[in-house]
Amino acid sequence: MTLDRETTAKLERAITAETFNTFDKKACLEIEEQIDGHKYFLGLDTHTSPSWEEAAESYFKTIFRPLMKLVCSWEFDVSFPKKEKSKLYFELVDHLYFERLKRPSITAEEAAEEYCTAYGDNRRGRLLVHMLQHHRC
Image 1 (cartoon, rainbow, N blue to C red):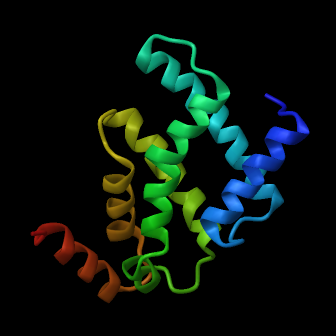
Image 2: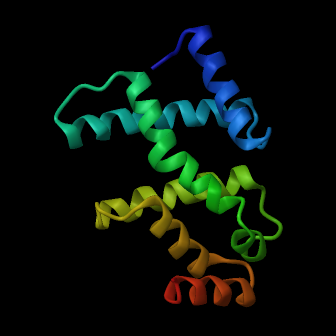
């Protein structure tokens, strides 16, 4: 779906505000495509035809914000010290997509934590995340 200039500008402003300029214009376009995909799956889940705006709101609430919160956390900084946050975000989105094919009820947070544990760059980071996963209050 190609958005009009006003909607595209709003999306870019929203992403920039949420990520403190972590995402460039190309990444914003990729998120736009992801919202299109989210709209499709949201329609299947709800048996409705959501608007693009409804899909964008759902995407930010259920995928973008939860994943970005984790991407910006110290656990992910320790586990992925050299990785750009935008690159890590898109890796997590891909991981979430493939995990949901196997387990439709997995949350964005669960998939991200599993990714961090499995693929983090250093043992210490993976160990810390593993300990946090199993010792939550």
